Length: 431
Image 1 (cartoon, rainbow, N blue to C red):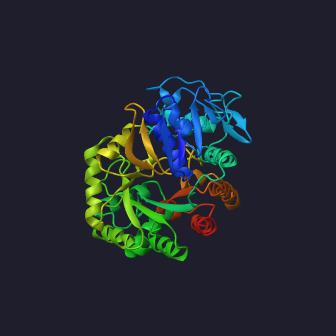
Image 2 (tube, helix red, strand yellow; image 1 turned 45 degrees about the horizontal axis):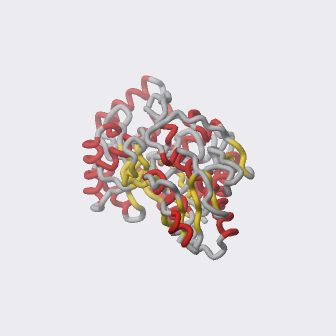
Image 3 (tube, rainbow, N blue to C red; image 1 turned 120 degrees about the horizontal axis):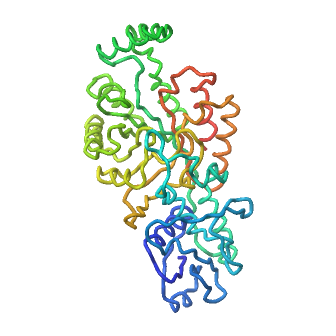
């Protein structure tokens, strides 16, 4: 048992200590504010405050974990043995920076509470993030820091018990448009045909007619391919289906369509099926609840996991809504058009609500790669090179590599064969 002494135990303090020591490093941890208890402890121990007590393992604290609310913090990013870091400390500290405050800053998405300009979908821009501006978005820095801390602790306390996690790859399949032409009903099909005709989109017209006579030819219907890959590589994959009414940004097949419902049931026989929440549900908890219940009724199982449409996340309100709708796990934390670790970690973490100063009961699974971030890459080699970097960084820290692919892009013609790329990724990086 690792004991940490500090001058005050706050919700922020206990939150980040649990994440770093228990979830990333597999170390049981406890805390104390009593000097006598700390001195009597014969096992591994850390002092986290402004001054060391004796000659113990000491990390000098920043004020962040002992504050409340949001402040405009000036951050200067420096280098620590090849890894970016911030919140530097004095010479007496065992580490040159406050690893706990820096980790809290990234995990809590502190910077997303600060004033910023949102994009057209109300999203935080990656270009406004500390990680993007300082070139460490591709690094799970919180995990790297934690493992470097562990190395130093083991030098000091070689008998410390550690149960490190194992690497895991998860493939997320996002199904917000299950079919391009099939199963869309007479009115929508005719409207689509006339629109393609008006714009002289001859190729789409031919595809549309072929699919009308043989729905299995729909370009987005690659579900047999995806299930075959899941079986071939014993893949941990999760399908997120949109199950919503038609709207400007929600254009999937009607949830009342029997073919669509049968598809969802058949996928649920092989993989976990969860909800791809609609654009409409972003600020409407009742719509979230309705979609969740409707999907659960189709698969006859509880739906606990969710992804927000276009990865729309407004911290912390989105997560409050998801908690109200009784979701337990979210897979929306990441950037659609940038590769990397939005929260600085590859491990699942609980959302800390800074406005309420409490940990919300929803676990956030941060994805590192969304297929839309790959559309402008010049070649398959360029893509595989970037994915390899992500894989190697996560593998080194025994983390969780999560990628998001959509059946829509996998069925789209491109200068790169999307299916081949997906097959290579799950073959090479699922170990």
